[in-house]
Each structure stands twice: as structure tokens, then as C-alpha cells.
Length: 115
Length: 112
Image 1: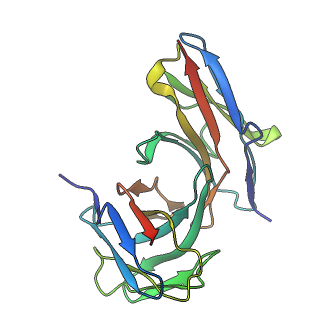
Image 2: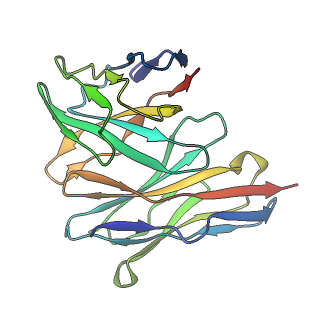
């Protein structure tokens, strides 16, 4: 079945460590996104990419890095520079049309906890 | 600045009643689109309904309908005959210039 797969579902990180969250899609979508969600809050955009080997910072990119070496993969690294990384992370993808993007399809999310 | 406003942080509704979730938008893109998503407590984000700026008819998907009032820049979600499983966060999202702009969400709780 087509969809987006995020892994792991739960992740624990020690302070000072980098961790990488995986996001893979088989929907042949051009655009991919990473969002952060804190409890009871909305989504905040970290990074997005509309084409392979290109990506743009979102509203809260500091302390995060991404790569887009393949169309179907968009991993997010939470670096030690991110001071408060405990949150729920959602990856999404969408198709690009002449009018913009279609609806975004989401993975199941990764809950990251700093211990 | 482009913005989505959801003025209801939380709502309680009796089961089987209809509920309207408010959304106003501000975008400079003449060819914008509006989406509604549902996020249950499990965290998954579920696409519900879409309305394009040039669509003449209000979008409907089963129990969901979108009350689109372009002049008022309003795109309210209407859920008919609410069910306990409708309890969730609901987000209004605008597509503008290839970007997705998210509202802060409304937490809907359906009471039995």
C-alpha cells in the first residue's frame, strides 16, 4: 500500500546526542515536510523540500538538519544544538500541481523524549 | 502576513448534534485551497475535506461539509450528527503559493 512510514515510533535521546528520524514515502510525491508538535499545540514547520537535493528552512529550523538525496526519503536529524527537542514529530508529503500542492499525507509520527 | 485563524480553542458538543468549527484565512494567492484535518489522541493526522478557491459548490465528504464564504474569507467545517469518535483536534490549513499554512487547531470533545 502507498503511504508514508516514519520510524521509530518512540525515541529516547540523551542530552548532547544527535538523533535521526526516518521518513520514507512511496507515493511518488515531490514535496516532503517535517513538522514539530508540542502538547496541545498546532504544527510548526521545521524544513520542507520540493525537489531532490534541495530543501528550505521552515519557521523553527534551528537545531535541526535534513537531507533529500532520494525522492522517497527525507530524514530529519535533531542535533545537540536543539535545546528543547522533546516533542512529537510528523513527516508529510504532497504532490505538486500547477495550482500548488495537493493535500498532505502524514506518517504516524515519532515521539522524541530527551532523558 | 498569510494566516489561518481558528478562534475556538476547545468545544464540547452533545453526541448526535451538529457542530461547526470556525476558520478564517488570509492569503495573497488567488488560487488557494483549504483543507481540514483531524488529529485523534493517537497523533495521526487524517485528511477530511478540501475546498479550492474557484470551486463554486461547498465541498462535502460524508458527514463533513465545508461552509465556504469567500467574501468573508471563512471556511468553517460542519460535522453533522456528531459521534463519540469525532473527539479530536481539528486543524484548518490553507495552501498558498505552494506553502501549507496551519491554524492552531480546535479541540472537539463529544459528550455522550
